[in-house]
Amino acid sequence: MDFAFMRDTFLQLMTGVPLTLNLAFTSVAFGAVFAMLLALMRMSNVRVLDGIARTYVFVFRGTPLLVQIFLIYYGLGQFRPVLQEWGLWSFFREPYWCAVLALTLNTAAYASEIFRGGLQAVPHQQVEAARACGMSGFLLFRRIIFPIALRQALPAYGSEIILMVKATSLASIITMMEITGLAAKLISQTFRAVEVFIVAGAIYLVLNFVITRIIMAVEWWLSPHLRRPPAIEPKLEAAHV
Amino acid sequence: MQQVSYFELIGFGPNGWGWSLLIATGMTLAVALCGFLAGSVVGTLVAWAKLSRNVAARSLADGYTTILRGIPDLLVIYLFYFGGSAALSAIGSLFGAEGFIGVPAFVTGALAIGIVSGAYQAEVFRGAYQVVGRGEIEAARSVGMHRWLMFRRIIAPQVLRYAIPGLGNTWQLVLKESALISVTGLVELLRQSHIAAGSTRRPFDFYITAAVLYLAITWVSTYLFQRAETHSMRGMRRAS
Image (cartoon, rainbow over all chains, first blue to last red):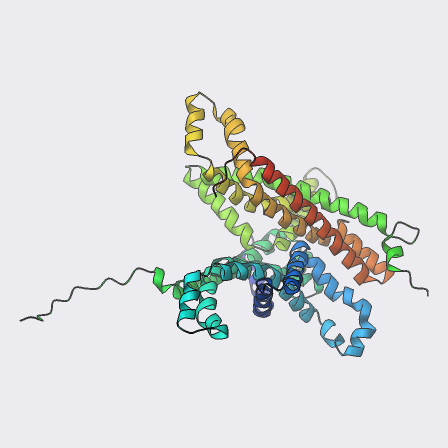
């Protein structure tokens, strides 16, 4: 093991961390909104909307992410004149936006099923109680259904976020120099695959560990009713003297 | 230049890429299947280590699954592709061979998939083993079965039965992961589409075809796993 080399590798790979996090969080944020829409479509009881969402999820979960990335980045180049006419070419020309788009569409498919599970797990009584208090529509959704569903879905959604952090590595194939892209470049320059792998792997593990901890903290924060009440110290007060 | 129609392009005629795509689909299936089987072997061993009472074995296995599930698969593929060749070249030079020896891309790919999916399968097997009743194992012991016989007759069939849904999910993961092997130059479905897209300048047509073929494989394997699940559960009473 050459520690000087590993330190240099570490410093070089760290410059890729912002891009990895940027890709992951941008696509998770856009993906969450889209996933919520898909989940509501699935539960809308409208045959057409349900069918569209179902097909979408089937297609995006059934094909490899790399195929989706290639389809957007290289594939849409076939329609360049049309895209230029619509003024969309400057968007699809950039590997960054293609990667974000592919990751967003992909995570939306997976997350919509997670959200649907969470929404369906909201107890009926809670909704009935809210209706009895006169809530309905968006207020009911915002105050009662959404917070409960979020809490139910969080553990599964947490692993989806971790999967997304891992999935950003595929952006390196379309020239994005995030951690894996830099690692691949270093490996092909130095042919020291093992050392570079250890450093890059360690960076990913630390990132994922931190994210897992944050999600656990959010889960803890969202479920005060499941925590044991703080022990109340018996106060010795002379109240009845 | 006259545009070739889509169906002529992916068909089996003189201008068609049909056969190449079909052969490449076969390659995808082959590398995914080999990787999945390698992963089953790794997964079984790791699950065994996780369930053992040996603290060292257990923490090694825990470390393995944590690391492999926290690192992008693409990195593992790069490690095997570049690292494997470097190791082979080093071994080769010991025996007097000169220069660079490349590992066949198929072997690299199958091994990398096996190592990654082994981590997922280990968890599947461990979960399934814990569902097998303690009473069954005690009964097997009390009729005098040895460990291997007990594993073959009592544990393995029941673990497999409970593991089928989880294995189905892992298979889908493996199938999609096999597309990453294209970076090593193995001519599987995605690589072949890439080649065809490059030489015909019709990238969208070929990538969408690849997507359809992947979907078809996913769809058929979902069906097969469902069949296997109902078949394996035919003797079970279902709690309703």
